[in-house]
Image 1 (cartoon, helix red, strand yellow):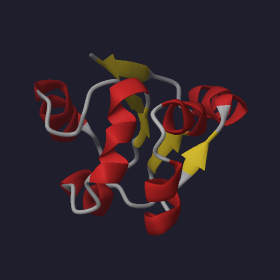
Image 2: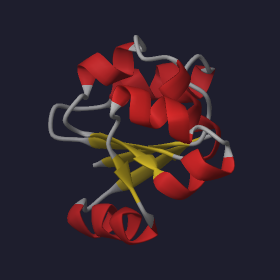
Image 3: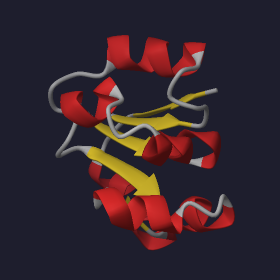
Image 4: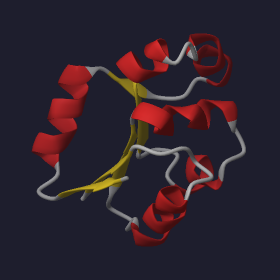
Length: 95
Protein backbone atom coordinates (compact mmCIF):
# COMPACT_ATOMS: atom_id res chain seq x y z
CA UNK A 1 0.00 0.00 0.00
CA UNK A 2 1.09 3.56 -0.69
CA UNK A 3 0.32 6.06 2.08
CA UNK A 4 0.19 9.67 0.92
CA UNK A 5 0.50 12.19 3.75
CA UNK A 6 -0.73 15.72 3.01
CA UNK A 7 -0.33 17.12 6.54
CA UNK A 8 2.67 18.06 8.67
CA UNK A 9 4.46 15.35 10.71
CA UNK A 10 2.96 16.45 14.04
CA UNK A 11 -0.64 16.36 12.79
CA UNK A 12 -3.36 13.91 13.75
CA UNK A 13 -3.31 12.62 10.17
CA UNK A 14 0.41 11.83 10.45
CA UNK A 15 -0.06 10.01 13.74
CA UNK A 16 -2.93 7.96 12.34
CA UNK A 17 -0.91 7.13 9.26
CA UNK A 18 2.04 5.95 11.33
CA UNK A 19 -0.22 3.49 13.13
CA UNK A 20 -1.49 2.11 9.81
CA UNK A 21 1.73 1.72 7.81
CA UNK A 22 2.70 -1.90 7.28
CA UNK A 23 6.15 -3.37 6.75
CA UNK A 24 5.71 -3.57 2.96
CA UNK A 25 4.08 -0.14 2.59
CA UNK A 26 5.62 3.03 1.18
CA UNK A 27 5.00 6.62 2.30
CA UNK A 28 4.89 9.70 0.09
CA UNK A 29 4.94 13.13 1.72
CA UNK A 30 3.20 15.85 -0.28
CA UNK A 31 1.78 19.34 0.35
CA UNK A 32 2.30 20.18 4.08
CA UNK A 33 3.81 16.71 4.61
CA UNK A 34 7.11 17.83 3.08
CA UNK A 35 7.68 19.90 6.23
CA UNK A 36 9.13 16.65 7.58
CA UNK A 37 12.49 17.86 6.21
CA UNK A 38 12.43 20.38 9.06
CA UNK A 39 12.21 17.50 11.55
CA UNK A 40 15.13 15.15 10.83
CA UNK A 41 14.41 13.25 14.05
CA UNK A 42 10.75 12.57 13.19
CA UNK A 43 10.07 8.92 13.90
CA UNK A 44 8.76 8.45 10.36
CA UNK A 45 12.31 8.79 9.03
CA UNK A 46 13.50 5.98 11.30
CA UNK A 47 10.42 3.77 10.85
CA UNK A 48 10.27 3.92 7.04
CA UNK A 49 13.76 5.12 6.11
CA UNK A 50 13.95 3.07 2.91
CA UNK A 51 10.27 3.50 2.00
CA UNK A 52 9.54 7.19 2.49
CA UNK A 53 9.70 9.86 -0.21
CA UNK A 54 9.10 13.58 -0.58
CA UNK A 55 7.45 15.07 -3.65
CA UNK A 56 10.21 17.24 -5.15
CA UNK A 57 7.81 19.82 -6.58
CA UNK A 58 6.26 20.43 -3.15
CA UNK A 59 9.68 20.64 -1.48
CA UNK A 60 10.57 23.33 -4.00
CA UNK A 61 7.29 25.24 -3.62
CA UNK A 62 7.73 25.30 0.19
CA UNK A 63 11.32 26.58 -0.23
CA UNK A 64 12.81 23.59 1.58
CA UNK A 65 15.54 22.68 -0.89
CA UNK A 66 18.43 23.55 1.45
CA UNK A 67 17.04 21.41 4.27
CA UNK A 68 16.48 18.57 1.84
CA UNK A 69 20.09 18.66 0.67
CA UNK A 70 21.43 18.97 4.22
CA UNK A 71 19.79 15.72 5.29
CA UNK A 72 19.73 13.85 1.96
CA UNK A 73 16.09 12.78 2.10
CA UNK A 74 14.79 10.77 -0.87
CA UNK A 75 12.55 12.58 -3.34
CA UNK A 76 10.43 11.71 -6.34
CA UNK A 77 9.14 13.97 -9.07
CA UNK A 78 5.62 13.72 -10.53
CA UNK A 79 6.69 10.81 -12.74
CA UNK A 80 8.01 9.05 -9.65
CA UNK A 81 4.70 9.74 -7.91
CA UNK A 82 2.89 8.02 -10.79
CA UNK A 83 5.34 5.10 -10.63
CA UNK A 84 4.69 4.65 -6.92
CA UNK A 85 0.94 4.53 -7.50
CA UNK A 86 1.45 1.98 -10.28
CA UNK A 87 3.67 -0.17 -8.08
CA UNK A 88 1.24 -0.27 -5.14
CA UNK A 89 -2.15 -1.86 -5.69
CA UNK A 90 -3.79 0.25 -2.99
CA UNK A 91 -3.36 3.89 -2.07
CA UNK A 92 -4.65 5.82 0.93
CA UNK A 93 -4.36 9.59 1.34
CA UNK A 94 -4.16 11.07 4.82
CA UNK A 95 -5.72 14.55 5.14
